[in-house]
Length: 386
Image (cartoon, rainbow, N blue to C red; front, side, top):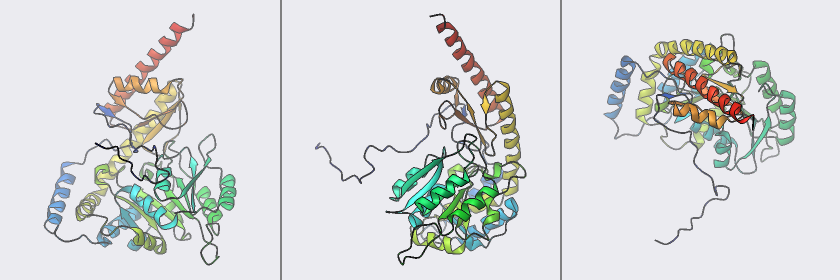
């Protein structure tokens, strides 16, 4: 066959698809999933809802899914105590697509997106895919955001979009409301100049994919929406709801902001099947959210145990823990994998991240890590006399 010479878009040369390892092992603790499968009652209701939706698959789904937006608004009112108009809610196929909509609407050539490293590795890809420049500034040593440095960067760069993750992935660090307010104030009037020469506000996106796992007393940025029409708070049903396979992400924002996302979304982007399944899952919110308390307790126990082993384990408001350091984190990762425990090599050099699993999975993790560290220490002792 002849050698193909495809007209690859500049900037995509040599790029590879995103993806954490997908391996069939007893304990998969690498992608921050909820380890508990839906109950038989949830499965039955989803199956019934999907069957009813399937009876009209010859018709396009509702473009603006008002019933789902209303159900999501009801859920947020219970979860965070913030009552929103359903028209302030937007949803898409995972929070990945929600983020893409945001950068399609507000980013683009000649515009930039500002974020804070270390953070979620997909953000630069969203920017790349929308031809938006991606700019970062480092977090402090404790992974908090230096709001003064951020304000200076916003004033200098005038980004169209700023992404601040809370809790942050991979560190688990929550963003205090005072810091969120400071970022929002710095963003006001410091977006890119409009075509008519007038100032704009930088859109501040606070990604709360893991918000349900935050510790008691840690507020949600949803509380800041009313006073900040340039704020968007992103959520997902993948984590706390145990519905990663559903692919349903959503955000809350001002109606003006949401209406711009409606402009850039593809027609009928959210299938009738997805809408039906999401509505059925939301009807079981109390049952599904009941799992969150046990996962929080398991997370806190994991942090305590890692520290007892002499490791650094960072406080987490998510369903994962960043820990280390290791001289050779890749070797530790491989040792755990050999014992059937898959975690993630991510974050600052020397550190690893483990999702919180079932008690049985966490017992397997602790045993495998203890064994791996013992093997590593034995190897060092053997080499030292030489």
